[in-house]
Image 1: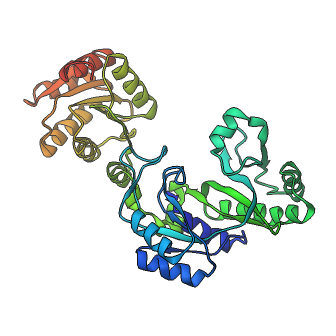
Image 2 (image 1 turned 135 degrees about the vertical axis):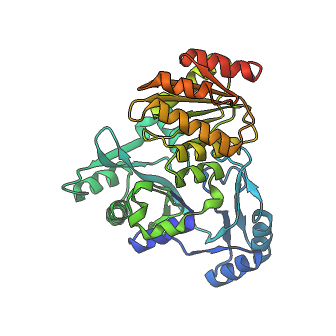
Image 3 (image 1 turned 180 degrees about the vertical axis):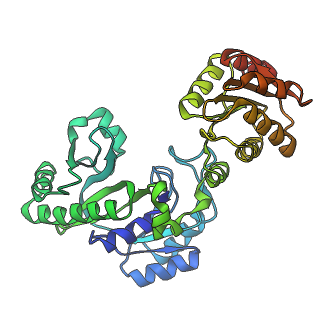
Length: 388
């Protein structure tokens, strides 16, 4: 689950991480009132969307007057912001954040992720703040310093000092960085985060540090025990992907016209690859899991056919945990219930595969059975007229 910047900053404040005053607004009038309440003579109006690159896409506007704040909020609210990280049609802007403008001396980068290689939380920092960390990593990786946190010992003060020296901070700033790092680590653990970024972590003109932006991802598997689960913003999520989560389906929308329904993530990847190799374009990644049931298959088909781009469906099921005849019954029931009106190609393999194929053949439905994965890919690509 992703959080908006204003939500991330609220958590930062709770954990002693310095931020500049700011307030979210849902209307131009509220934006003006927030600017008045914050005081000062310059503000930033920042679109709140779950996508990076907002500034370059016009989602962050500098305002020197209350009229500018109102105009900026009016221009942003209710529109779609398209960035290099957003969906192709952009993300809806329903909220803007009104921030006090900062007098910045230098911008740093600070982030934390779960490092699977070391099985530890890793902090990353860089002198090249305000830039995409991916670009920094690709072009100047020497500018990134990393420390890994032993889960038994926790974050150590000497690690904070090492990072402070690497960021060329003076003694007072190193102390401030230590407070920030300890706060971030507690936040990371307490809220079951999978990623947190502060970009930029600014050195202000008075020498103090402040988080001017914030990005937080929360581990979906831990949401049941987190009150911040209520902060989820469904408007920022793909509707089909959100629906899939309700039924424990792993679904990702793609750009093609051949939908896939597979049990197992590795098999799903292989299925998409062979569709591509056969001249087609996959419309989605969809893993229904090992315990595929008629209900889950039906829900998966509903999600699939809700995509107007889908012109054919390839079902690729390996009956290891569940029998192929039961899977075939589920597919038949699902096709009848959902009313699928595009070609469906099914490849079954595993326990009771012959019985499963017989059920599909005698169903009277427009379901084409395939002998193997290559045969299935060839047939489904042919059903949409070849390469698109």
